[in-house]
Image 1 (spheres, rainbow, N blue to C red):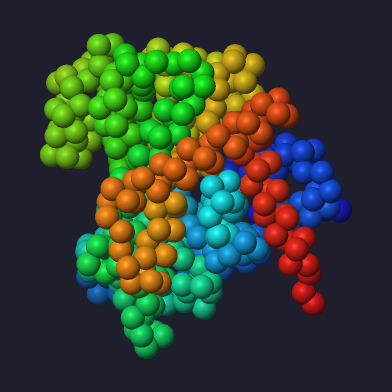
Image 2 (image 1 turned 135 degrees about the horizontal axis):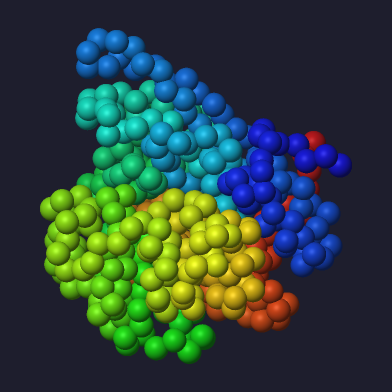
Amino acid sequence: MSNLSFVSPTRNSPWGTYLSQIDAVEPYLGRLSRWVETLRRPKRALIVDIPIELDNGTVAHFEGYRVQHSLTRGPGKGGVRYHPDVTLEEVMALSGWMTIKNAAVNLPYGGAKGGIRVEPKMLSQKELEKLTRRYTSEIGLIIGPNQDIPAPDVNTNGKIMAWMMDTYSMNVGATSTGVVTGKPIELGGSLGRVAATGRGVFVVGREAMRRLGIEMEGARVAVQGFGNVGSIAAKMFASSGASIVAVQDHTGSIANTLGFDMAALLAHVAEHGGVKGFQGGDVIANEEFWDQPSDVLIPAALEGQIDEQRARRIQTRLVLEGANGPTTPDGEAVLADRGIVVVPDVIANAGGVTVSYFEWVQDFSSFFWTEDEINLRLDKILVGAFKHIWETGEQHRIPLRTAAFTVACSRVLQAREERGLYP
């Protein structure tokens, strides 16, 4: 049977990467493999035109997307990104990975994702608000607290979620705090949400290091992407005794074999918007970042960063995927041949969606937890999920990504089988 798709993917494109991961897990699904084709086809993809009047009086049009990959286990859940390189194929892949991620952590969600092809830095605050509100109105057909719950992603934040929540609420005639997560605390947001993804990277990384015999004290950590996820993960590793020896972000790359002064580095980034100009390390070329020796490498930028060529150069023992899809299939094959363990994004960066789930639950009940309660619940869920995935990998002698997909796909397809087909 031919594979129906909205795009024609290549092997290392986002959707092609996702499809290859489904192909790899199919042999381990047993009788549930009869349903596997449902994972290769998004349930619904919406493409919308977003016209807004700019501050100079001209009208500009932007293209937006919302893809619901699976709603089998519950409402769709996934972020919205604003980026000039956003495409339908990318959003499809991200929605598929959200299906896997939510099931891998056993959250009662399906997978969804959204995006607008735009360079947000080129828009004023007023233009950004217009863009967000019109996009929300256009996708309002398919989102809702029991249907599909957006959240922040690349270049989106709590303020944008507040605009989305307000727009949706105005359109339905009632305040609906649960339609998005990642909101400001004053609008039903959850304590601990901002740091959740980075914290999750650390928690899962700590568990993987224990199993691999990598001592935290003195461990060398390299971080690509020093935004919300990478910087918080780096801070937590450093606070636990590790040394951050290399950092790369959109402004440049720096290295220090003795480890950075994290307080100074974080203060510099907060003031200057990036690592460029930081005096506590050596400036290196961006490609040289991949040559820096480390015990743990955290790609926390965009997808497709570790390809076959870079995978041959990387000098590390453990890759923790803070970003979504940062390793291509060819790159991962090289890492496997070299004995480098990869903890996949669907578990490594699942802290964000887990606390988004907590936020959603708190909004429904109008009862809110303390940050300590949030962190304890987050740690318990991620530690348990990682343990199950690790043991599945050992049982079948398969890489952690295939193990994570085996656990997640089995849950999704079991639910699909139980629900049956309608009509």
